[in-house]
Image (tube, rainbow, N blue to C red; front, side, top):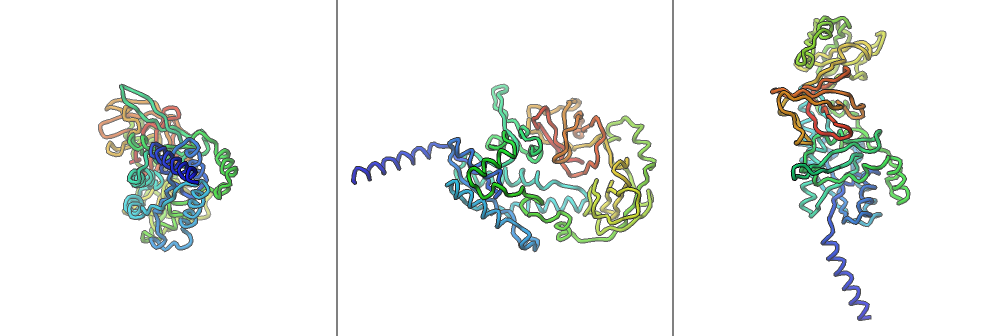
Length: 411
């Protein structure tokens, strides 16, 4: 009996030393299937895993009550951690989330711009506040369930990390990480990036994870399945204004078609309330964004109306009839110098440089052929084909092949 006890003590001591030498990964368990399988894959690779659930939202923040699913997601994350036999902890990052994501988002909408809270959440929370908290807990890396990949190369004696699209093209989430930098990528792992979504679910089913058949999350990042328009109306004050329909033969469209000047092609159309006909009213211009079709509540037109622009100062929403209305389309967008971000700093353009890329202005949009033109004031992205609903405040991300090399906030 004494020999057995000593052997157990010896084994426990050796195991403790082994764990100390193992690299620790903090996995952001969201309560979904992707992060669940990510934790399992890393565990199988021999990493020491800590499961961390980010509580970034409190129901009382907007009176959402049962609409906010964070408690259910947290429970599922805990059950996954228990099934995998890994430590589990809840991190309350709600103060940082409110200050760095929600407050910025509301401010942008009030200015008539259209921010992307998911991109902000990754830049400001998952790969900053969460990353810092994980490092304090002794983690060497953080991992998420994003469908993207990480590569690396050696250049001039330095290691450069690459952000690559996920193998499952239908689920690729590299766009949402377009604001990450080299330091963040050096600490990031994306275990499911090589897998198809169907493979991820198959692994979860084989493991008997509670998240195996759980639907992908929808709605605002960390807030839940509430519609964004409804969420904004609980935060921003309504203000009745006019809906003005702009005709397809508006003079500025003809002038734009003749222009070859890059700066002119990137500029917004100069509409006024006299540019068209009043066809209805709206609850506030800051609730609408370019390309929006629903919520206008104006009938009797030969084709659906689409928002082509908003003026929050005058509280006017400008619309065009039909999805091919010329006011919806532009070939060039502009990113101010201070808003240009390079994931690959070694590929940064200098003034006067040009670069052929593929770019997208929203998640799930197919990559579009374009050229970057670097000027003193910033970067112009000139597409080969006109793009629909280019919205100020959104992010444009540019790629070479399947690598995301940079991005910027659309001005």
